[in-house]
Image (cartoon, rainbow, N blue to C red; front, top):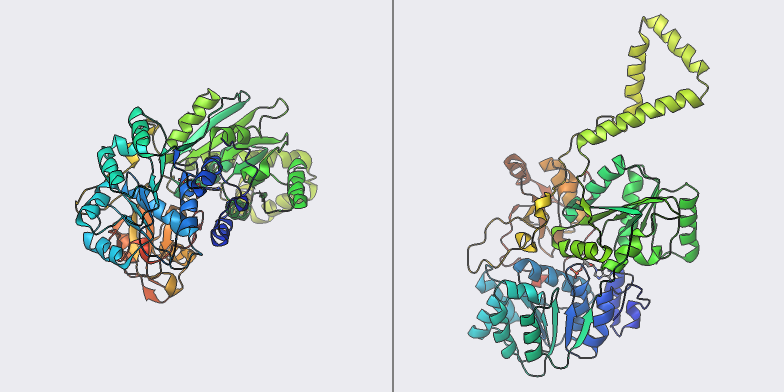
Length: 576
Ligand code: AMP
């Protein structure tokens, strides 16, 4: 059992250099607890029973050892991952592809119901190294003999309890019975109901266990709130919160080094004094940043867990968990950066719908209810700015010598026959021009009502077995579209965000995930985007090509087996 205090790094694990390089580029600093607990066992060939939920890094916990053992020369399925939903199967396939970016000619195929059988058959014939599929469709292929598991070395059951809940457990067992006897099995499940234990007992050979233990801890001096929303809206949510929260200094926790820098830059661009704090920075640089925080020349640090370990600065009034931590221990450690030296602290947690289990786990571990927070509205922000303005005027009257300016205003009034109110109004207008007291109205990021604290299934799509693919809302509240420009055309995510934001007249921040493939890309756009915006988008060209936008159907040739998506940026660029 490993805890958050994992001190070894990815390079201490026997993982091959191209995979380590990918991890470095993605920006992971250290293995998450479930990774630290699972990877060594899986690399050593053991079967594994892993208790971990979404958000703990469990995908990499099995993907990295699998990739490490793949023989790229043999284009036959060497690993099979069974997942409960199409959505999860696609996410897992994406994760594999990002870790395999330096493995030449690596092929993974997601297979699930609702997707054209022909396309799947074509890909299977061409040969793939890893399959990620929902149980029903995998069974179909095994029956038709279009999929052979003779070369299978590893089988993963991902979210086994979900598969049980969705009625797939018999299919799963049927598949297990059709795998070669020597294969390694890793079973991951958030909970371990009796049925799952029985499946494990029947099919796993002396499995090792990896579990994230939830220790309880008290955090009394800290007021905890959470905001439930999709990752596409986090930046907007954060900027709204920064506008109205009374904070002295703040630590914002993110998962990767890359994101510490990106987010710090974005906050600086918005006028905050923010800096990154990550494990890639030298000790001296890190100390300098912390010192600036202590001395009030810096207000916000965007940090990873590793870099913020032991940080003790009394001024820190707020901790924002921009990315949810891997486990409750990390959460307690993070929020403990505030409420120091007898002061009160505030902790804010961003939770995506699929991370709600972690929210409950945290509440349980801290034995405290975390209250849901509403994001400040446009009106709240305007009121707050007006208040700040008034306070600034009062402070200036109190602190500055205004003799010269008083005379100037009197002179202007006499010359032009103006009242002091007219002049003051004009000056007020000038002062607030760059940061309007009444900001431009922007739709609030998608929020979920408190009633949304219900089982995860609401946000899951179960397999629409052989039903025609429908326009489908994604987890980020958007709808997925396909456009005909991809990496080979030289398109970058910023080109796509820029063009779409300008042409469709929607804020860049409401454009969701963009994935680049060789010849096309997918982009998630707001479900409530007006028809006329879509009409305009139909005429848009990017990097010299018509984008030919249309709803993504998930059919060939769009299956990610053809190309590796580029590394995702944390979030879309504002205003293009
Ligand atoms: P999962 O629990 O597999 O859905 O992963 C949740 C998120 O954690 C994903 O966005 C991963 O990219 C990220 N992640 C996984 N492992 C690490 C790591 N060691 N360091 C930082 N982020 C990670």
